Length: 168
Image (cartoon, rainbow, N blue to C red; front, side, top):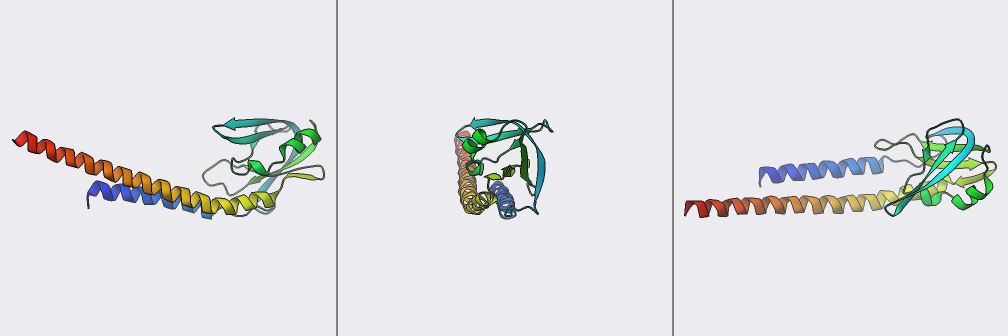
């Protein structure tokens, strides 16, 4: 096998393993593995980017936005939150402690007596992501690796042809 082919396969395997490591080390969220920030609601921004969406939640006590993850934004009950929660109302924001490759994201939100982003919904998404992300990354890694191997083979084939033409 070609040396460059072995290198490409090794890089593909490393990328795949890192993706799996991040996916499978993601644990269910609960009050023990989250950071709870208490404050007073300031405002919220809806962010739609290339077909996915997130929410940036701001509290009066901090300039830093608390951002929902793209995969769990559907768990946030935005309409009810926007109607019920007013500026200055107390809120509890739960963010993930175990975000190895990304910024901590909002995984739970409580205002008053109501849970506007239930932890159990986020946990269902974590379980679903373990399957879908694994399949997507396996497919992407296999396609990328096969494409690069085919490209290297084509380049080597062209080099051989050029040598034959130059030697004629």
